[in-house]
Amino acid sequence: AQSVAQPEDQVNVAEGNPLTVKCTYSVSGNPYLFWYVQYPNRGLQFLLKYITGDNLVKGSYGFEAEFNKSQTSFHLKKPSALVSDSALYFCAVRDTYITSGTYKYIFGTGTRLKVLA
Amino acid sequence: SQTIHQWPATLVQPVGSPLSLECTVEGTSNPNLYWYRQAAGRGLQLLFYSVGIGQISSEVPQNLSASRPQDRQFILSSKKLLLSDSGFYLCAWSPPTGQGTHEQYFGPGTRLTVT
Image (cartoon, rainbow over all chains, first blue to last red; front, side):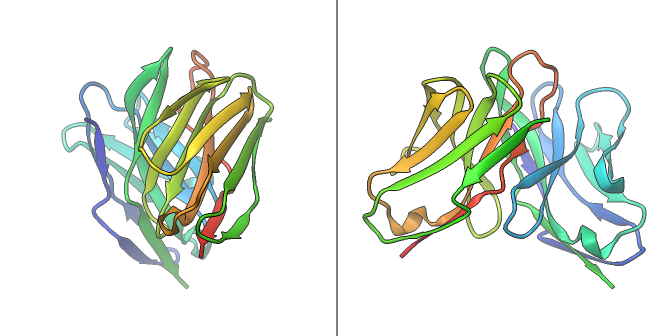
């Protein structure tokens, strides 16, 4: 079965510094990988995805992620963190085929990012 | 553009009472629909998914049920709530088969507290 792991429960970074939120995956076949962000008491918002192609994927709000097949990683990055980036971040992978091109998804346990002013 | 609505936003219910949470999607047809529960502000547990009207699949046997009476309406129900049903319930949709995108779009969530 497919899985994703987010090894860090929390990441603290100073405002203006680069940030990295880690994700590793285990899949059979080609991975479809996603990052979502969740602000307090809100639903998840899609940030970016890797399906195929360039290993560096750019997404919303200045975030990007680097797909590394040899290390089975898909780390989320941002060159300069903002206090407003403080939130809960989820990595996800496409999982079981349901029917007619529809799939289920597996989410990591989440990493809380705290950007300090 | 597409929008997903959930209501109510918050709910406090006594143990043993019934539950009905509603989710509707606007701006798309035949979406795939999902119900998740998020406990303790962390990981998401897939509860139900639906690929069409009246087609419901359950991931975890439990006290809850789901229905899809209309194409863009997804309802989560319970006849008798348990304390363990407390959590943050999220509805999500993804585009119908063949439209080339793979991500899910989430509603704002319902915070359920069972007392």
